[in-house]
Amino acid sequence: MPATLYNLDSANLFIGDDDPTNSQFLTLKTVKVPGLEEQTKDHMGGGAVASIKLAMRSFTIAPLAFSLEGFNPTIMPRFMPAGAARIKYTIRGNVRDIRTHEDIPLRAIVEGRMTKAEISEFKKDDGVSTDYEINEILFYHLYFGADEKIYFDYWAGPNGLRIDAVSTLQGVSRNLGLS
Image (cartoon, rainbow, N blue to C red; front, top):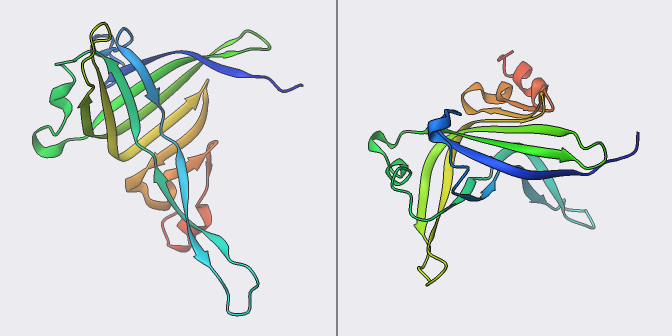
């Protein structure tokens, strides 16, 4: 089958689980779904002619970032809540397969702590928007349709990372006596 083009044409953000009363679809301007980056270190052997970057099998999860139109007093209290609690943020989107015209659901669930709430500069006829950033992400799921694309659970150690539903550190987990 020939390749296709997938286009995310609409998105919604829920502060908490996807309870419709927590929906931000009318105010959501931008959202950046977290990605993964494997950590590397530089290596240059004593007799080597070139340095290389060694993959270290440890990962960083980029923050969840989003921008909402206007000033949102119901979201602001999530910044530095009592006890520095982490909460869930759910992103739902519609991805359109350009070739087949099929609508495919995208869903990301992130549990983290709001570490940034920045109100933009006011400008006549533009109003303001507020940028938010979620860090300390200890749980993250990303689904494309029914397919699990990313699963991360910090507390599960090497068993807590799957890409396309496959444990990426299964051998490490076995060797550490965790599976």
